Image (cartoon, rainbow over all chains, first blue to last red; front, side, top):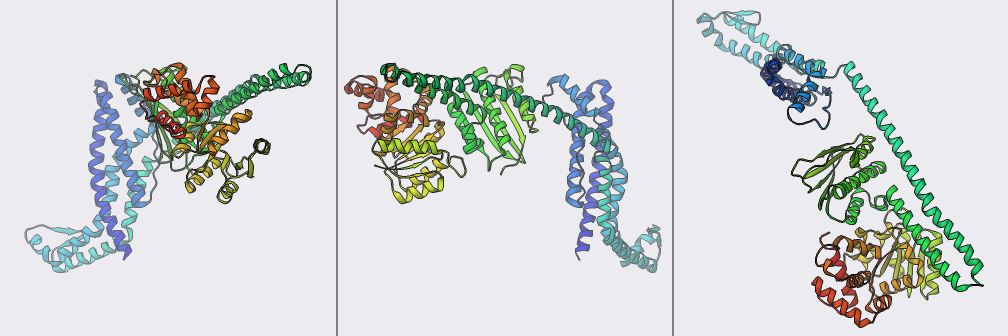
Length: 424
Length: 216
């Protein structure tokens, strides 16, 4: 019974796929070819990215259906467009070129051709076997053959020439056989349709290899950055300790020695030195506290990212609104990177851009930690070398995180960051 | 006066016990972890608790959370919280119930035994002891805004000490002026900030702190 139900469902799916493949593929193929041809006239430069994006959306719809209906997983092969493409005509040309250089684009177009032909044929077999042709055979046998025959229509049902009740009965019997066949093969037919799509829409081994090579390059680069960063950090900490707390403790020890010598001969001087020693110890503590805040802020350790950013906002000289929606805590290194990224973005907004109102939004969804820092400055921020944001970008890169700055003239400036991570 | 003390570092705990005993406090319990603190606060009913923010076993803000929970169970339970760092965020949480009997100080403040003990006594009596760093952070954010910008430097000084929880007498002796002079400054400050004048020291401090923290 479930088999029959599955076969009927597959029949309906096949009918849908037939229409979807035929209409969609033909329209998109024609538009793609025209658009690429019109590049000679210049118009194509503007229409091609739009059409190709539509093709990708169409292919993505096919991918989604393949997974949902037949459990066929078709990976997405498109190369990601680099962040921060220029606007205007130059950016459009760049986008168009990048898309045309992507081999996946050309494979998409091949797929459109295959989909409107072989794909359609495979898809239409399913609804044809079950239930359409079966029903037709039965209808013929019920007497409909007669008017058709009398009107001079030499009706063929598959290989049977229907000219009498007996041949019509044979057609009905054949219809029942088709029915049985449909029950057996309908789901496989739909699956075949999707496998055909996978042959073109999934990345080829060569493409996958190139993608892996690109990823290795990127990992090598970010690992170098991470190692450099942490080495520089350690040097800074060493210097701060050496020149700060350590030096103060040495001074304190010296003072204590002097106090020991003076305590009986010159109690007044000893008392003054004691006060100085106490002051030194207080200053050493302050320096250590600041150093600790720079390494790993205490609130971050105690409460996690959300409260640490709130505490940070409270220390700022300008009104800062913090909106946190984190149902758990990320891993410590991710939290730390995110914290310092927010800290840098805030410093940037306040010190360099002179904002007097800042909004921070932290939330987690789809396996991504998303952070937005928005200020009310009238535009002008960029990922320049001196902004400190390029350092943040490198640091986030270690975690496959990305950073983008949007700063239209007239404001507001918004720094967004995304770090893939799980919360616990 | 009976004290429950929670501090995980042995040296500091030992030092605090000796200091408090030297100033005539009775140490009801000196514990080193959050669960022990919760138990001691519930069973021993101390006059005041001195608590480190970060305690084992979690080494997060366990001490603060235990103290806040104990205050929810017994409103107004005097708690003095100590930490290696002070955060406005935590100060706000401690002050949120508006009942007073709250202290929040850097650990460095134990260097000055007399002032530290004064803070413990003040908190035990239902008063407030806020670390100067917390107050400076609060003030610096509003420094250029009106009406805080309209305060004279002297008034600002008085406001700072008042917000820390000091009484008029204590402020007068620190600034080496008469108590009458301080009373005058105080009423000027309250006038400029538009706060209702109150004779009750605790109420006064809480009003000032709430004013400084508003809209943040």
